[in-house]
Each structure stands twice: as C-alpha cells, then as structure tokens.
Amino acid sequence: MPRVAGLRSPYDKSVGGLHHLGRMLDKIRLMQSGALPEHYHRNYGLSIGLDGQLCGFLGVAFADVAAQVAAGRADGDVAEWIFTTGLRPNRMQTLVWNEHSRKIGWNDRVAAFNAKVKTEPGWEHLTAITSFDLIEQSEEREPPAMKA
Image 1 (cartoon, one colour):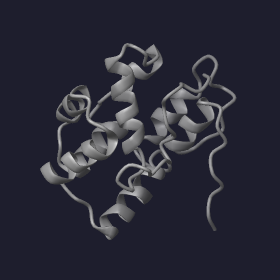
Image 2: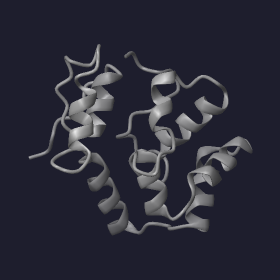
Image 3: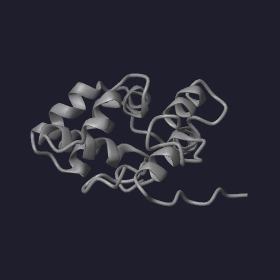
C-alpha cells in the first residue's frame, strides 16, 4: 500500500512531542474530508488501537478530539486542548508513551494481530514486528533502525 498524502509516520513527534499524535490528527482530517483510504477505516478511532491507546493515555475521548479537528483547529491548538482537558504529560510520561507506543506488537497482545495482517494479500512481503514498523513498511517507508 503506497503512502497516503498528508499522513505522517507514527514515529513523528512534531505534535506535543508524542509519537502518533500528529498521525492521529492527520487521519481524522483525512476521514472528515473523505480522503482516508478504506483500508484505514477498520482501525480508525478504535479503543484498542493506537488512536484509542493514545486517547486513553491522555484522558480524552477520540470523538472529542475529532470534534476539535472538525472545528478547524491547528495541530498545536488541538494538542493544547488535549493537554488542558486531559493529561499534559511530563517528560517521564512522554518517554513512557513514546517507548510503549513504538514497541506495540512486539511480544504482546497485538503480535497475533500483526502476524495475521501480514498474511493478507499484498502484505505477505512485510517483515515488521511492531505496529509502527508494520505501518512504515506498508506505507513504503523504511522504519528507523533500532537503537542498541
């Protein structure tokens, strides 16, 4: 599956210093404009997916974040709304989220789902273990090298 214009990598931390936050806002905007490809719909806003885990961590409802985006707010303004309404993560909480999120799918409850996805037609060539790397490979980006 090729890259989607306007959809950041989950590794991007340009919004609030958090992995996936910018991507989640991109997905919301693309969904609201009718431009989010069908393949992304099955995980959109799910409480057990990356969107839901991030919203749960931050203490906000995905639907409320989507409403902020629908109101035309910029990334920084949506992030500030999230941090004012829910959790404003400190440095340690940011580190915990970023490390947790980039390892989802590695030897955890999501591993079986990722393995199943890689058996679907067109995905058999993917070698990723984590959800982030599965996303990167499926969108034809090279995942960053693991740090020693």
